[in-house]
Length: 227
Ligand code: B12
Image (cartoon, rainbow, N blue to C red):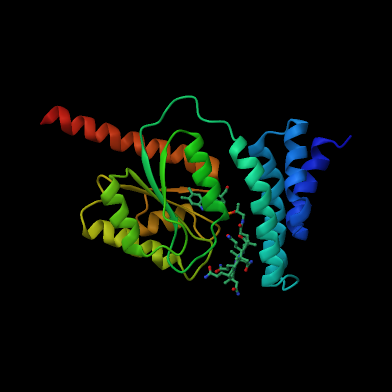
């Protein structure tokens, strides 16, 4: 029988090799073994994706290999994400999330979305390559407390800046908070462009979003008491 380490290594390898055929069955085997779905994602699949990124940077892999790896990861996530345990208490919060304009990477964003839903949030997913004005318009329309923006690329960092700028121009920054995530952003970048938080991974992201939602809810309560 395989050990936990062997199964996690196997999940990583599935992604590195772009093994679409076995992705689901290895994910199912990990669950059957009792590995927590989040552990299988972060210590298995994501480790594989890191290797793929390195291989692409070193020109050992090209777009077709990266596409196969992405497909294999998505197949395995299809098994693992629905098994992430729901949060114990229902959270009252609406989150608008998307990958910013110019960027089509959405695997990480989809993981954050799944964890938010599991934690009880209402998530409005705008998808990928989302125009700046769409983030702002949707947040206004649904009364979202938080906008989550994902980008993995450097040229698309300015898309985040544009959303922040538009929120400031419309005077929305005091009732809509923002959080950024993805391989090309950092805490420093968030501070520089005026984002309210940065999440290095989905777990940290969800924890920070909870704090942001709590801040907005408290501010609204205060305002109600005053009026
Ligand atoms: C898979 C992949 C692809 C897939 C994407 C499939 C998909 N549906 O997403 C495909 C093959 C389509 C692809 C295409 C391209 N890619 Co690509 N890709 C990758 C790769 C290997 C892995 C990304 C990934 O899915 N990681 C796994 C997930 C789980 O991790 P993650 O996204 O970081 O998400 C976690 C955290 O960051 C965080 N998070 C993410 N988003 C958010 C949002 C919020 C709000 C929060 C709180 C947290 C959070 O939580 C997540 C889970 O814990 C990266 C390498 C890398 N180092 O990232 C390159 C990489 C991002 N790609 C790159 C490039 C260049 C491209 C292309 C331009 C290639 C080309 N010549 O066409 C195109 C992009 C076209 C476009 N306009 O977008 C470069 C970007 C370089 C740069 N700095 O600009 C990278 C870094 C590779 C490299 N080393 O050069 N790619």
